[in-house]
Length: 188
Image (cartoon, rainbow, N blue to C red; front, side, top):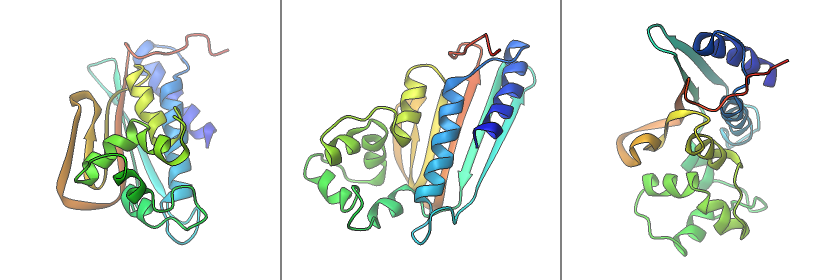
Protein backbone atom coordinates (compact mmCIF):
# COMPACT_ATOMS: atom_id res chain seq x y z
CA UNK A 1 0.00 0.00 0.00
CA UNK A 2 2.04 2.93 -1.27
CA UNK A 3 -0.77 5.31 -0.26
CA UNK A 4 -0.48 4.27 3.39
CA UNK A 5 3.29 4.66 3.45
CA UNK A 6 2.99 8.05 1.70
CA UNK A 7 0.62 9.29 4.42
CA UNK A 8 3.03 8.10 7.11
CA UNK A 9 5.96 9.79 5.35
CA UNK A 10 4.02 13.07 5.08
CA UNK A 11 3.49 13.13 8.86
CA UNK A 12 7.09 12.12 9.56
CA UNK A 13 8.58 14.72 7.23
CA UNK A 14 6.39 17.49 8.68
CA UNK A 15 7.71 16.63 12.14
CA UNK A 16 11.35 16.66 11.02
CA UNK A 17 11.51 19.47 8.44
CA UNK A 18 8.26 21.35 9.07
CA UNK A 19 7.04 20.51 5.56
CA UNK A 20 6.19 17.49 3.43
CA UNK A 21 9.17 15.85 1.78
CA UNK A 22 9.72 12.66 -0.13
CA UNK A 23 11.72 10.12 1.82
CA UNK A 24 12.67 7.38 -0.65
CA UNK A 25 14.38 5.24 1.98
CA UNK A 26 11.33 5.05 4.21
CA UNK A 27 9.10 4.38 1.20
CA UNK A 28 11.44 1.60 0.07
CA UNK A 29 11.52 -0.02 3.51
CA UNK A 30 7.74 -0.04 3.83
CA UNK A 31 7.15 -1.46 0.37
CA UNK A 32 9.78 -4.18 0.78
CA UNK A 33 8.46 -5.21 4.20
CA UNK A 34 4.84 -5.29 3.06
CA UNK A 35 5.80 -7.34 0.01
CA UNK A 36 7.97 -9.71 2.04
CA UNK A 37 5.11 -10.27 4.49
CA UNK A 38 2.70 -10.97 1.66
CA UNK A 39 5.05 -13.31 -0.23
CA UNK A 40 7.09 -15.07 2.46
CA UNK A 41 5.49 -14.85 5.94
CA UNK A 42 3.31 -17.93 5.47
CA UNK A 43 4.30 -21.43 4.43
CA UNK A 44 0.76 -22.14 3.23
CA UNK A 45 -0.66 -19.20 1.29
CA UNK A 46 0.51 -15.76 0.15
CA UNK A 47 -1.16 -12.89 1.96
CA UNK A 48 -2.22 -15.08 4.86
CA UNK A 49 -0.17 -13.27 7.53
CA UNK A 50 -0.66 -9.69 8.64
CA UNK A 51 1.70 -6.94 9.68
CA UNK A 52 1.61 -3.96 12.02
CA UNK A 53 3.53 -0.70 11.72
CA UNK A 54 4.05 2.25 14.01
CA UNK A 55 5.51 5.71 13.51
CA UNK A 56 6.51 7.74 16.57
CA UNK A 57 7.78 11.33 16.34
CA UNK A 58 10.41 12.01 19.00
CA UNK A 59 9.04 15.13 20.69
CA UNK A 60 12.30 16.87 21.55
CA UNK A 61 14.25 15.84 18.42
CA UNK A 62 13.89 16.12 14.67
CA UNK A 63 13.56 12.38 14.46
CA UNK A 64 10.84 9.79 13.86
CA UNK A 65 11.06 6.12 14.82
CA UNK A 66 9.38 3.32 12.90
CA UNK A 67 8.61 -0.26 13.84
CA UNK A 68 7.19 -2.98 11.61
CA UNK A 69 6.31 -6.49 12.68
CA UNK A 70 4.80 -9.45 10.94
CA UNK A 71 3.69 -12.58 12.72
CA UNK A 72 4.72 -14.97 10.00
CA UNK A 73 7.24 -17.79 10.12
CA UNK A 74 10.31 -15.55 10.06
CA UNK A 75 13.13 -15.25 7.57
CA UNK A 76 14.97 -18.50 8.27
CA UNK A 77 11.90 -20.68 8.64
CA UNK A 78 10.73 -19.29 5.29
CA UNK A 79 14.10 -19.98 3.63
CA UNK A 80 14.17 -23.56 4.93
CA UNK A 81 10.74 -24.33 3.50
CA UNK A 82 10.86 -23.02 -0.07
CA UNK A 83 9.24 -25.29 -2.66
CA UNK A 84 11.46 -27.00 -5.20
CA UNK A 85 10.42 -24.67 -8.04
CA UNK A 86 11.44 -21.58 -6.05
CA UNK A 87 14.86 -20.04 -6.79
CA UNK A 88 15.58 -20.10 -3.04
CA UNK A 89 14.89 -23.85 -2.70
CA UNK A 90 17.66 -25.43 -0.59
CA UNK A 91 19.36 -22.04 -0.36
CA UNK A 92 20.88 -22.67 3.07
CA UNK A 93 22.80 -25.68 1.79
CA UNK A 94 23.87 -23.75 -1.31
CA UNK A 95 25.16 -20.92 0.86
CA UNK A 96 27.01 -23.39 3.12
CA UNK A 97 28.99 -24.49 0.07
CA UNK A 98 30.22 -20.93 -0.47
CA UNK A 99 30.31 -19.27 2.96
CA UNK A 100 31.33 -20.39 6.41
CA UNK A 101 28.61 -19.55 8.92
CA UNK A 102 27.53 -21.07 12.20
CA UNK A 103 24.23 -19.38 13.05
CA UNK A 104 21.22 -17.58 11.65
CA UNK A 105 22.89 -14.34 12.78
CA UNK A 106 25.74 -15.02 10.35
CA UNK A 107 23.22 -15.98 7.68
CA UNK A 108 21.28 -12.75 8.30
CA UNK A 109 24.44 -10.75 7.65
CA UNK A 110 24.96 -12.59 4.35
CA UNK A 111 21.33 -12.01 3.42
CA UNK A 112 21.41 -8.28 4.17
CA UNK A 113 24.67 -7.84 2.26
CA UNK A 114 23.08 -9.46 -0.81
CA UNK A 115 25.44 -12.44 -0.73
CA UNK A 116 22.59 -14.95 -0.73
CA UNK A 117 21.03 -13.43 -3.85
CA UNK A 118 24.43 -13.56 -5.50
CA UNK A 119 24.96 -17.20 -4.50
CA UNK A 120 21.52 -18.30 -5.72
CA UNK A 121 21.34 -16.35 -8.98
CA UNK A 122 24.98 -15.75 -9.82
CA UNK A 123 24.26 -12.00 -9.88
CA UNK A 124 24.40 -9.30 -7.26
CA UNK A 125 20.93 -7.83 -6.82
CA UNK A 126 21.00 -4.57 -4.98
CA UNK A 127 17.58 -3.34 -3.98
CA UNK A 128 15.85 -6.71 -3.80
CA UNK A 129 14.00 -7.39 -0.55
CA UNK A 130 16.06 -7.25 2.62
CA UNK A 131 19.29 -6.25 0.83
CA UNK A 132 17.39 -3.18 -0.45
CA UNK A 133 16.45 -2.20 3.10
CA UNK A 134 20.05 -2.65 4.24
CA UNK A 135 21.24 -0.58 1.27
CA UNK A 136 18.80 2.24 2.18
CA UNK A 137 20.48 2.47 5.59
CA UNK A 138 23.97 2.19 4.12
CA UNK A 139 23.20 5.11 1.77
CA UNK A 140 21.82 7.30 4.60
CA UNK A 141 18.20 7.15 3.44
CA UNK A 142 17.22 5.80 6.89
CA UNK A 143 19.13 5.38 10.16
CA UNK A 144 19.59 2.88 12.99
CA UNK A 145 18.23 -0.20 11.24
CA UNK A 146 17.56 -3.22 13.46
CA UNK A 147 16.10 -6.51 12.24
CA UNK A 148 15.00 -9.39 14.46
CA UNK A 149 13.80 -12.67 12.98
CA UNK A 150 13.61 -16.15 14.43
CA UNK A 151 16.71 -16.40 16.63
CA UNK A 152 18.83 -13.64 15.07
CA UNK A 153 19.25 -9.89 15.45
CA UNK A 154 21.07 -7.48 13.15
CA UNK A 155 21.94 -3.95 14.29
CA UNK A 156 23.35 -2.10 11.29
CA UNK A 157 24.60 0.96 13.21
CA UNK A 158 26.70 -1.17 15.53
CA UNK A 159 27.65 -3.72 12.83
CA UNK A 160 26.34 -6.33 15.24
CA UNK A 161 24.82 -9.69 14.30
CA UNK A 162 23.93 -11.95 17.22
CA UNK A 163 22.12 -15.17 17.95
CA UNK A 164 19.26 -14.72 20.41
CA UNK A 165 18.38 -17.04 23.27
CA UNK A 166 14.67 -16.68 22.55
CA UNK A 167 12.95 -17.11 19.21
CA UNK A 168 10.57 -14.67 17.51
CA UNK A 169 8.13 -16.32 15.15
CA UNK A 170 7.99 -13.54 12.58
CA UNK A 171 10.10 -10.54 11.70
CA UNK A 172 10.51 -7.22 13.52
CA UNK A 173 12.20 -4.23 11.87
CA UNK A 174 13.04 -0.90 13.53
CA UNK A 175 14.48 2.17 11.83
CA UNK A 176 14.65 5.93 12.21
CA UNK A 177 14.41 8.97 9.99
CA UNK A 178 16.18 12.18 11.00
CA UNK A 179 17.10 15.53 9.46
CA UNK A 180 20.43 14.14 8.19
CA UNK A 181 18.82 11.40 6.09
CA UNK A 182 18.43 11.84 2.35
CA UNK A 183 15.11 13.39 1.39
CA UNK A 184 13.61 15.27 -1.55
CA UNK A 185 12.26 18.71 -0.76
CA UNK A 186 9.98 19.30 -3.74
CA UNK A 187 7.01 16.95 -3.40
CA UNK A 188 4.66 18.87 -5.72
